[in-house]
Structure formats: C-alpha cells, structure tokens
Amino acid sequence: MRLDEIIGLLRQIPIFEKVDPEALRLLAFSAARRQLRPGDILFRRNDYSDGGYLVVEGEIVLDMADSGAPSPHVFGPGALIGQSALFAQGQRPATALARGQTVVLAFSRDLMMKVLDAHPESAAVLHQALAREAREMAARLQRLA
Image 1 (cartoon, one colour):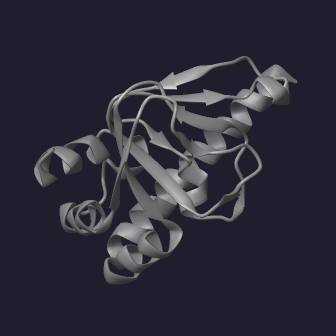
Image 2 (cartoon, one colour):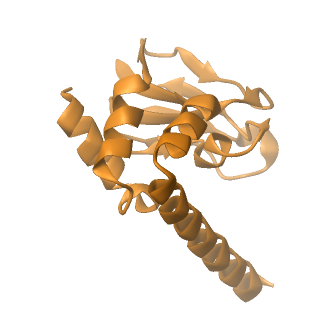
C-alpha cells in the first residue's frame, strides 16, 4: 500500500481527521510494517501496551472471551487497534490475532510523541479530539448508569 493510501486511512480515524498532513506523513512513513499469517498473534491479553496498530490489509480478531465481554470483535482495513496505548501505558484488554493474511502498521508511543513534538499544532488538535472522545464516553456511561 502506498504512503498516500495509508495517510488516507489515518485521516478516516476520528482523532486524526484534522491532524496536519505532514504529521500524518511522518507517522505513516516511520511506522513499522508487520505481516501476519492466519492465526498469528499480534498481542496477548494483559501484555504491556507500547503503542497502537493500523490494520492495512486483512483482519484482526480481538478475543475478550476470558474478560466477560462479548467476543470476538473483528477489525479490518482502516481500524486503529490500541488507540489509548499511543498515549498511555497499560495492559492489553484482549488477545489480537490475524484472521487471514494481514498487514498492520505499528505505531509506538515513542514514535507518536516524536511526531507530536515535531508538529505541536497537531498535538493541540489531537488533544482536542481526545478530550471530545472522553466527553462522549462519559455521556454514554452516564446514560447507562
């Protein structure tokens, strides 16, 4: 997949839609490409999370069966898995495995911070997008309560 196509996938993710194109280009160019075969494990539940993954081709299944959540969840091209891990350390809530031949781009937290340091205007835009998502999540939780 070409760099411009990857940038297009990133731009479709709500937190990245208003980020400077040059910041997205740096992120896409610097990401580590991983090719997975059917059944390959991307990460396991409770693993230390050090970043996120963009599904470029194929599908990733998140299996949360042992956590009590409905399972499995399937994510295809354009899905960002581990968004919060781009910004904060934590543990993976599920096991992720390739459903078939799959390609993902790995974005480490360090890479994300370097891109934001180089593009402070994009850091401000991302901050606003994440704050909006947090408000929306709080409202959904309040409705459930």
